[in-house]
Image (tube, rainbow, N blue to C red; front, side):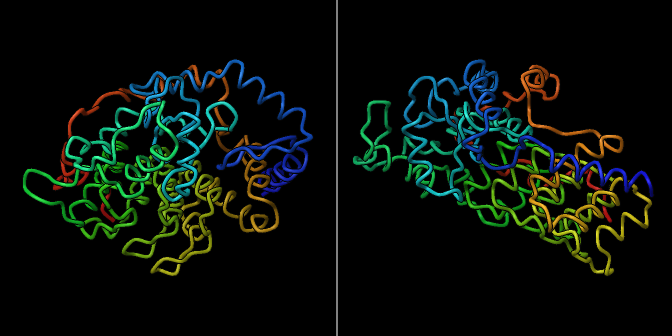
Length: 372
């Protein structure tokens, strides 16, 4: 008990004494913060992040107009953009495209991994798959010399109305249930390219698999301990508190599996800690019953302070104050970026250059998924 109390004290002290913090949204630095300005200047000079992301196939040019040296990104799409096209992406709304600077904004590890698993070649394989079949003479691919009006028409058609997304298989038109199942399986396999394709074709990000206890993709991302897939789903506007057939949320699953990093991540992203399942148990009840000390600590901290301190203060403080209880997680530094290759494998594999069906392995649910 004393260790837990000391942990909370350390967290609170760190929260109020921290000079700066990182959130899951683009940087909102204080104008009078010299430290933040110095960090921004350093990122513009060395910029290892941009170089790492630009190594992915297709990322040397803008995904839309092919202008060289793109310095912006759509993080939910996994594409890099030039400044002109990024401005039009912003106008689409965050439900369609979430724009972030490769130079100026802070980047979370999971978002970086998302970008490394996708990239312009893969994104265009999805969103430009049917360009050859376009019969509208007023809608032609743009170049870096195209005026804004042409860029707007092309980008809206490409991402908002999804005019060029491949919508058929050799067997005929895709059906919603097949897409939903394909999305669930893609998340189970950690295949973000396939998952993005399914979403582009209209899959329901919160679809529940009745063959697997009514679990949604977000549940399986927790079961698979895949923070990158979880972040991808959250960027795709999934319901973080959706329940399975037993009324369990993703936070219930993380607590039951004693996965502290998932618990902290879900709470930081706004998961409700007091939701009860069909057995009238909250995630905290489950953690207490299983004697998962770290989980109890995190949930009690959120219960006590989550509504009284800003999320970026409380959780950044908790992650540092409780360093004796779990591994700390921070946004990537320059040294972190150097080790990215060892954390991921074959991110460039599976790139397609012609339309392919998102239904592969649809009838083969993951055998690793534990039946409850």
